[in-house]
Length: 200
Image 1 (tube, one colour):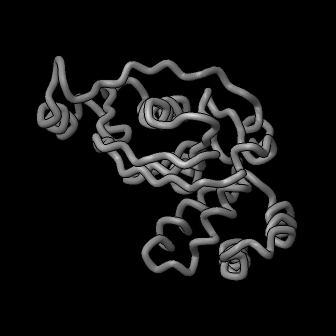
Image 2 (cartoon, rainbow, N blue to C red):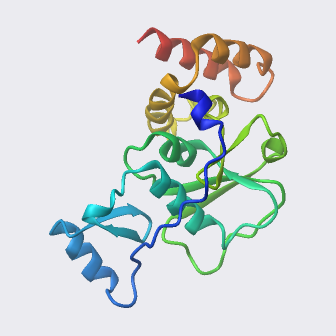
Image 3 (cartoon, rainbow, N blue to C red):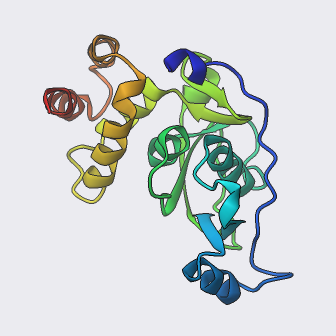
């Protein structure tokens, strides 16, 4: 499965329903409660029979929300990357790694945007092309998530997301990686959290 994630996949073209014409936001939420549409992320919806849980749909949703806002090199990371790669409930925050400073848009997005300026986007081994979406690799995403293990406000979501990613990479590879990066901030707690998850 890891090999498949590292293979470039074509960009996903998905026609999302968004508030506006022909349906307003309240109408789309009512249609969701009636089972006619499914919520994907933010203000993006799909007709119920269009497979809103598919990996290509998650990638297209994250790309649709980020691409108009971000310039330069960027990649989704953290809970957003975990959701794109493995599914589960859509995150309420869209996390992205960027190579330069970005102002948060004045016009709010339909999800909260959290940007981390980092060199990860310049490292080809750390970023994969997932259905046309630049996304941190499974191993890098686990590392980023577990570095939050001691932050009470973020730990629960981070641990849940990291658990979903564990089958996509080997325990040996993760242990070796965490040892190599032991000087990064938060890695002491991340190593403890990794061992707890692997023992579960």
